Image 1 (cartoon, rainbow, N blue to C red):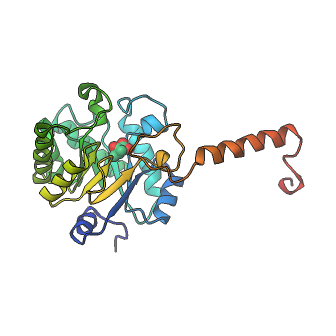
Image 2 (tube, rainbow, N blue to C red):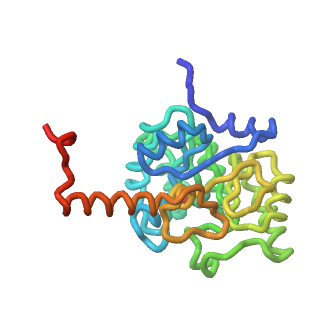
Length: 266
Ligand code: KIV
């Protein structure tokens, strides 16, 4: 049977062919269908669902069951894109055994073709262990939201020479450990450029400037659904005002006795 979805190796081939990689977060079937129709390469079921869908102030409360639930919807809603599921906080930090079990759950129960892990230097062995089990891993370095308290909040990473060199070193280690791609979050463009040149796997930037092999944004920022979006996110439309206009007109129609009309009645 031919597998019609993009696979991690297709994403790697895009870097080799100098084709920019597009990625966006998705948490539901509707968004997945729209992003798939738009030929976005990667749909990430990010733990950012904790912020934008559930309204938490951090991603930390997100659970494995929640990521599985959202991932199943995204897999059902898409046919072409590579679907990647985020490993939530404390689903892989405790031990290699825990990481392998939960990465396996995402593949088996959610039906995704890869997982994403935020990686600190101490987690290279965990990443390698998951890859060795046959599970493709997208690494995530730079600003890592699951460790935001240790990082002192939402801060650009790799600003000093020492920090920049440490990030390049970490990117090389994740590539050596077998990650098929690496997300670079909130790092200066020059550091992203150094990493891109240093590793053969694709770099996917989010707040990392143009010198990356691909870009990812949170869907709700991209379509203008969030109240405020970070400086690095471009709002391609303003769905917030479109939707709130529609909701207001709906309420006004009900109050004026104009909905439902004859055309909406049996
Ligand atoms: O959870 C998420 O949405 C992410 C992306 C911003 C890369 O990690």
